[in-house]
View 1 (tube, rainbow, N blue to C red):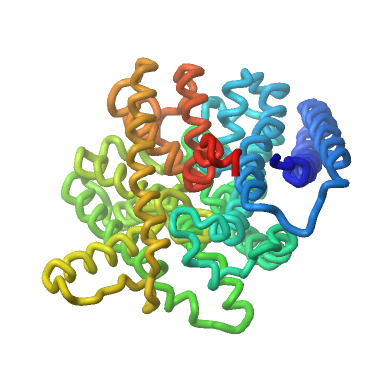
View 2: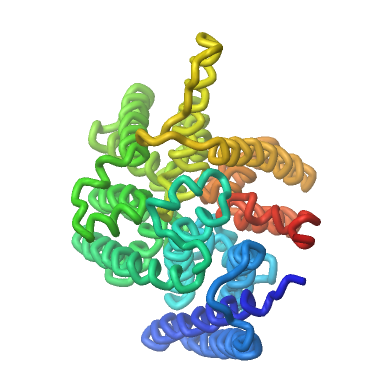
Length: 482
């Protein structure tokens, strides 16, 4: 029988840590003087008590490592449970949100999706705005650890190809995760601090610079204003674009660069492809905007670069309502959101490396058709790719498309129109943020959706962030019998 106590122990510790993080917005609320600080005091007390008691009750079952089943359960459990407690300030605070809305917002934050159900952000207490940013910042650093430790170990979606490049964790999941977290935390914090300073230099106040730095580096996209990033313009958009790109690059390369391998980042094929795609799409979008609207060339380049980068990295900021850019660019925005960033980054969606492996597989199949007796093996960065990796990647693609279709149908059954249903499904599974259309597009939000639709989207955000198969494996009979 599966022993869930080691899993509950780790989740309990993380819940208690989340409760400790609530003290930061508490201090901010005290400084603001709007009397909202008791919300975070009460939420922190509930969260720390629940997490601490859970960890204490399961501490006697802690072992050196985790079994494969326990690792699957832990990976999903963390992202399912933490938003429950992360939702408390939304239910008890000024937003007075229902359980559905609060959990949706917290899940969107923890998975760095960036979809929101709240309006009137301009007038919310600073503590709640900081809490939204903190949820995304914590989710961003958490997903890096998951991508570098757990997913390669679980052999899901082709991530096992990075086992040798990340860290060998076989049989030592928890201890090794701690070491990796320590290695990347300094880099993550440094990027956040530098981004904050750069935002300050563009004219943002200290609070906006801090919160937006957290949601930029996490590629989350929660903003402090209903207009999203449209409140700012000019240099701030360039700063955001640069740091969204940096956050979407593989963090293991940063670790290696700090260790002395200076040029390793520029020899990574997925990094080259990612930066190249953004550059090409930004140029195409700029020329399209100049041909349609009376844009100043600099404005066209800035808006194109910012919004393309935001959608492709899954950050979800919007500086303008790109639904007015015409059908060609709208369709392009839908598909580039399904590309994503690099593996082992805070970015989301399908990821660049999977498309590269897919192209490599197609090339091999074409060569086999031309030369039936030849022996051809797909390669990635000069190394042969085993059939287990290719099978995992193909399974991911199939499951991604099927999940997108099923969720789209499910959302349409709640009364949503075609564009809202399809783009809503895509933005949730790919963790992008805004969808398309008047309802959930860059100028709207998810507040008007039914509770059923919000729960469906919340589950999709969780499944998409954890590469789908990790979550759906828990719903198979064979998993629990193993």
